[in-house]
Structures are given as structure tokens and as C-alpha cells.
Picture (cartoon, rainbow, N blue to C red):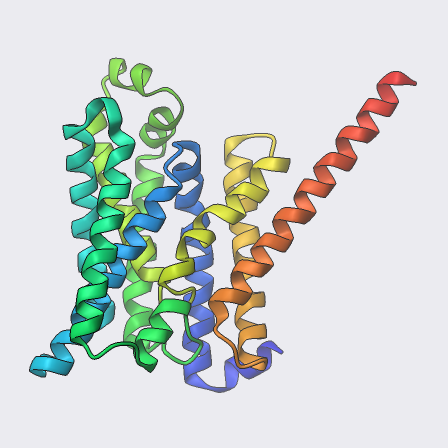
Length: 283
């Protein structure tokens, strides 16, 4: 099956992009889940949608050749900055920042989509992902994002780890929490925007959370959870791309369903292991 993906350039672009996204999505998603910020992916994905719609609207109404992909990425980064600012304003209710930005993203999306004369094929591809929509330029952009995200996580792993599990201790230890928070949320925005070509705006949060949800059921430590989530993410993306191509359906749906299947298997395996241990103890 993979031989077909190596014959045509657009399929190779989709495969290589999928491999990159399957790596950086769960990698950063592990920190997102541990910090209980899973909904931030949904908020930023809707902000990304508003940027995509804005790019399409400019092209339709004014003939301005701005790529919707890069417009969406710009909006996502701006949205992440606003989320961080709102978290500082509502220090006692920091979770309010996420629904505020999500609502704003949805509102802008509705306006821009209406101004762009409603839904079309391009917008549908951005919503649910597409095997054929990934260009070589998109691949290079996503590769740069992947290198940037991986490098910064490796560089600030200790700080991110400490802030994720014990923020007060991290601050006392001299870690600049505000800077790390800002860096983390901007990286999250970049990963979400980079993933929309394959997974789609409406399903991108699943790629950052479902592999992690599966990994933490069977992992024995944080690093193992990261490793397993990346493995599950890659399996989901590759399987989703193959099924999406051969059945001529958007890959986003098949990627998510594969992730859910992996999650169900890990839950079942965990239950079997627990029951086996219980029987041994009783014996």
C-alpha cells in the first residue's frame, strides 16, 4: 500500500507531512494533557479556521493572493497570545480564556466564510483534511515547524516538565514561568496550524489528545508516555492516510477513528492486566 504513496509527488508530500505531524502532535500534546489544557487545541483550531476563512475571503473579494494556510497559522499564533494575556487578566479563572477565544474564533469564521460566499472545496479540505491538498511548500513549512518545536521542547524539557507537574516549585526554583508559558502556547498554536492540512481544523485536537490518552493508560512514566503517544500518533496518521486515499474520504476522520480504536485497545489491555494481577494476589 505504501508503494502508491511513493509513486506520486502529492502522495509523498501527504505521507511525509503526516509523519511529521504524527510526531510533533503527540509530543506537544503530552504536555497539553498533563497541564489539563486539552480544550486549548479546540480553541486555537477554531481561531485557525477564522484565519483560513479570512485568507479565502481576501482572495475571493479582493484578489489578494494570501495563502489560507499561512493566514490560519498567523491567526493561530495571535490567538495563542490573546489566550495567554487573558489567563493573566483572569488569574483566579484562567480557564475562561479558552472559551472566550474559541467563541471569538467561531464568530470570525462565520463572518469570513459568509463574505467568502460560503463553503467550497478548498474550505472543505481545510475542515476535514485532504490527501491531495498538501503542496511541497506546505511540506517545507511543516518541516520547519517540526524542527522548531522539537528543538525547543528538547531545550526547555526540564522547565516544561516542572511547570506541568508543580508550577509553584518551578517558580521557586527560578524558572521564568511566564516566558515558558508563552513559549508553550505559541508552539501549540504552530502545531495545530501545521496539522490542519492532513487532519483538518475540526479534528486536529484529537491528534494531540487521543494518542496521549491511550499512552497514559499503559505507560510507566512521563517519558514513556511521550514515546508511546508518538508511536500511536504515527500509526493513526499512516493508517488514516492509507484508508483515506483508497476509500476516497477525508483522512481526518479515519485518523481520528484509528486513534479511538487504539485508545479502546489500550483500555482493554489495562483492564486485563489489572484483573490478572488481582487474581494473582488473591491466589
